[in-house]
Amino acid sequence: MNEPASQTPTSPTGILVIDKGVGPTSMRVCAAIRARLRRGGAPKRVKVGHAGTLDPLATGVLVILVGKATKLCDRVMAGEKEYVAVIDLSQRSTTDDAEGELTAVETPIPPTRAEVEAGAARFVGRIEQVPPAFSALHIDGQRAYDLARRGKVVELKARPIDVHSFRVDSYVWPLATVTIRCGKGTYIRSLARDLGAALGVGGMLAGLRRTRVGEFSISQARTLADLPEVMGQSDLDPIPGP
Image (cartoon, rainbow, N blue to C red):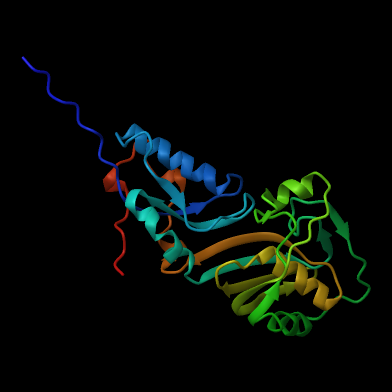
């Protein structure tokens, strides 16, 4: 009697909108989702990717693409992003955020809220932005952050980006809480650095939360803790229409 042929596991396909917490990298979140799908019977090499990196210290919307949905990566990344950021205008950082070496900047007369708002307005529109030295961009085949960590001088060229709005929500020296809507490739760390430079003070990112990526918002996001340890097709959201 012939044994029945073993069936190849069907690869799940869909989208997850994750509310990433502080700490894990975006790739670590992908690995956690992949492990849970495999426990649910997905193939060992089930495709899991993300549409737009969030730094470990950043929180908020991380769009996870599974299976055939990974083909939508460029489409999702092309959507407008919205961030709520806290900018510390009293310090500078080697990484432009709280992970780097911090230097206090003496500021006898802090800028007023009106001056901070006017400074932010200067960065709205199509502008040229120099990415942070500690970034994942490639220089001669090596990641910029790898070179920077080895003490190499990292010189990145300015790139055109689109900032659609840069609103100051609250300001009590030295912290400004802002909401930024922007296009693909924008570094919020660089905006924090450059705003401080324009005001003649410090400028570093003290906190960051992404609240929207294109059509995907924080209101529909789930944390990893919200998801079951064993996942299947029914746990994924369907691929949106064109």
